[in-house]
Image 1 (tube, rainbow, N blue to C red):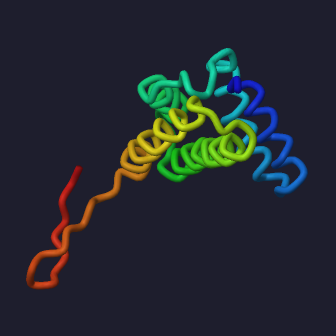
Image 2 (image 1 turned 90 degrees about the vertical axis):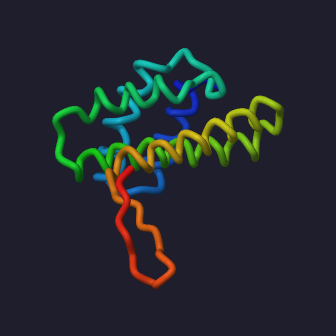
Length: 130
């Protein structure tokens, strides 16, 4: 399935089931994402391309804005993963799901800029930066 088609289905779903501000926030990210990657197949998206896109989209923005935009994109990939499993159970779907899990891990690390906490043997938390 092409990104443009999946993005349209996702936005149509949110226009029916979500509040006005949610639709507005998702539309902002998805319109730009579809413009840049509309001709790509979902399975052909590379993690590097998506991360470059998100870095361009969120450059110079506040952390809360970055978090919202990354969350919108993650919601899109969650939706496409579910739709792909329900509608298109093929090898390409499985490959897309594998790419999705790697992408989600990288996006979670990047957008939050959070510290990872490791539990020491004494029960205290020791911060470790990524």
